[in-house]
Amino acid sequence: MRRLLYIFLVLLIFGLFLLIYSLRFKAKGPGEVSPISKVVESKLIIISPHWEGIRQEFTRAFKRWYQEEAGVEVELEWLDQGGTSDDLRYVKSEFSRRPEGIEIDLFFGGGKDIYLELGHLGLLLPYRIPDDLLKEIPAAFSGIALRDPDYQWYGAALSGFGIIYNKIILKENNLPVPADWEDLADERFFGWVGSGDPRSSGTARMMYEIILQAYGFEKGFDIITRLAGNVRSFRRSSSDVPKDVTLGEAAVGLAIDFYAWSEIHRVGEEKIGYALPKKLTVINPDSIGILRGAPHLELAQAFIRFVLSEEGQRLWMLPKGAPGGPEEFELLRMPVLPAMYEKYKDETSVRLNPFKWGEAFDYDSEKGARRYGILNDFLGAMVIDTHDELKRAWKAVIDAGLPETLVKELSEPPLTEAELLSLADSTWSDQRVRNETIARWVKFAINKYARVKKHAQQF
Image (tube, rainbow, N blue to C red):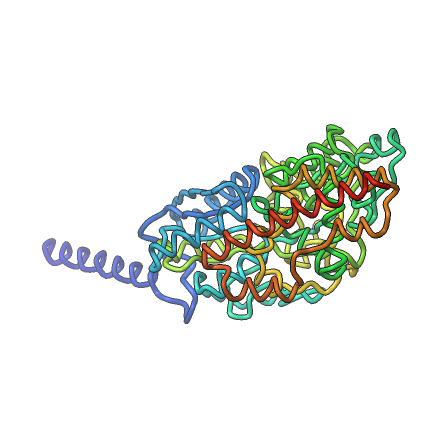
């Protein structure tokens, strides 16, 4: 009798084990993964230009969330090659050598245009998040898509691009408070403007792209040329610009909203101000997507669900120490879920509800993505690698009383917008063509600035 009872208990335990095992790995449906299924490997690898505060807060919160969701402890490894543009170059280079996958799961941050390029190259994996979460994210606002129609990427947070300024420095030097991009091209700001290098900073590249689109290519390049002539020096990281403005090294600077708000939060509104040029800037999604061949696909999908959930979204906007908020770093970012602004309006330090702002212009993301790489090279040749020559020419034009003919000559581009886009679409991937063209642009710029300086000195 005891032997039969023992056999019965063993069979019962074995049956329960099989039942639990089958439930844990039962699929929910096409494109979805059971929230309690267990991953084989527990390290998620993310390439991201995000700063350390975002990395630490999302690591800490996701590990806790996933432990509760799946009963599994995970680790996150973050990679960065020095900024958005460098990260993009690295990913494309690695895929050229290993097209099946590069042992990285996710690209997180860096705006939106790079995700359009990655998608066009077939380097992103589509993932449709659950419908109850998907319906909370608008497909677009102010004409800008917040998620890919084929679910290759999602906006994870929103970013505004504007002008940070030091109120004390402006007052002491009798400088005007800037309201739009053209104000930064004013000769009174000579030596007082701060900017990142668009070749290493995705934020800086986006702002120069915005200027070209908001004013049109010809006028936009004129503004960029004179603005660059006013730049003290180009910083590799855009995060250094707001710090320079706070320290008084620059009076004004190109800045993404959260870096500006961070400085305002740190030193006070009586010292630092921030302006989003009305009808001349955009609020853009800072996105996330799964890379082709992701080695930990299920975990990557879970991370996207977390980032877009309320648990992830409130990390962007709540003050540190608030229940459900960041623990060590204030992130000061705008969530992509509209409901968050009303729900946490009395707790957040985020100063703008972008869904009620209504002051953006119609930004062409496809155009921005098409010329992402070539625009960096173009600006590098015309105003950064030749910056010293530009500053000397611009100063000579200012001293000559700003003759209209010389201002126009100073800002003359070596090609039209149509020609730039044609190059981007055709031969720019040919390294020989690219190097020869950049060298030709540099020579054009140096000769132009020398000629303008000489003419200005004759006035």
